[in-house]
Length: 124
Image 1 (cartoon, rainbow, N blue to C red):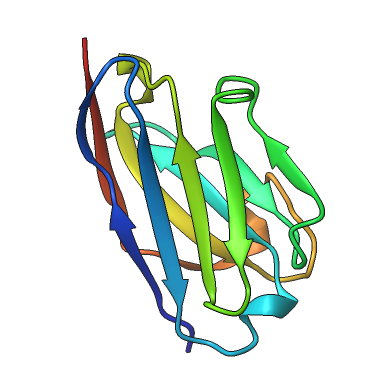
Image 2 (image 1 turned 135 degrees about the horizontal axis):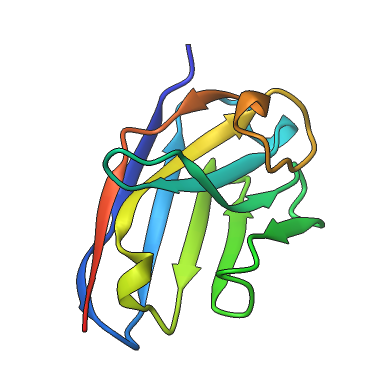
């Protein structure tokens, strides 16, 4: 059983920055892709960013491209999401997740373990 423990998030003004972290309990972390999704109450979970096992390949939703950066530290079993130029529409609960394969994917069904979620609120 893999545990993903998220930290970071909180309240920030528009234009500000936050960094989310997601620490994995499993030593096979470096063998799998990781991703970030977000979800508002009553809405479908939305892809944000993904990274492959080595960090050499990343993918972003159009809505965050150029503002958010996903990265990973395999020595620390941790994946990060640096969020800059935040806007009120970025307000959501953010989830990290581990893929079933080494590659990055946008599809939620490609992920088998999820973090607990962390609230990000951007005020205007």
